[in-house]
Image (cartoon, rainbow, N blue to C red; front, side, top):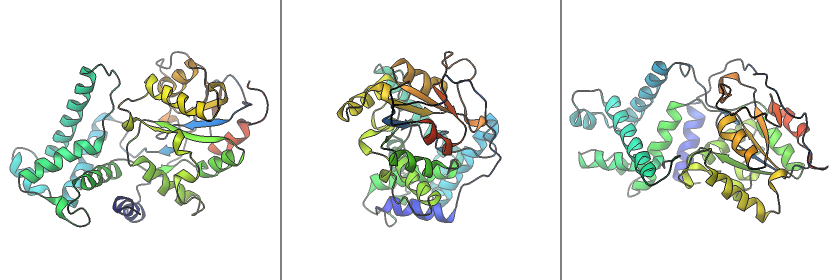
Length: 325
């Protein structure tokens, strides 16, 4: 196990970020009740498999306050307070760190957009790498602590993971691990197409391990890594056609056609509409009304092939046998 994976495991086990609430489904129209001839299911992560909601996310001001609180946690855990205060005496250290982070994020996205990328994605560990270097030049070398001594790239990933861990809720929706196992047992290949970062597979592994009671030790036991496409690895976010074209190329190697592939997501605009336009079939997760997006018209009026409200029902609705339809 890598240092980062071990660090993530300890955080996950000691500081669980689970915020229980009643899930309310959002009833939506669908074109079909079941789909036949399905050979691959490619799922989105956040809002589809992972419930990242937490109290306060509903309002813009409260959400921003929660994110500043997460930066404060990073400051305290890595001893950045004095250095950040010296760099900017006018603001609290957490606000200064938040400003650095958001400024660098915007700069990277603007640079990509200037190069013709209308849907830029950023590797967050690169942003944190610059922040760590700025702090080091100002006398704070938190990365010198074990186990990150002599590993600035590893320390940047540690910072990125910590901020994400502190800022979001983190649990699988009920039934995800069992549903994925049943789909795989039904000879359906499983993949991921998601706006996500390097830590997403780490978190999926920890959450699947928990929900399955240890029955799933690693996310790649369920997902074929050749069918996993994370936005951070390609520099584009959904609904970039680039990500879908990369998926097409991978499916071709499996002799799986678009009409044998189901995209499962929670966003009509970024999951369902682009997949349907490219000839794939679609499954909209509507089990959590707080996490269904694109219903305000930005979904382009597309109707998903199926709608599912609980993960446990998905294997009954997607059939390997039979002609597509």
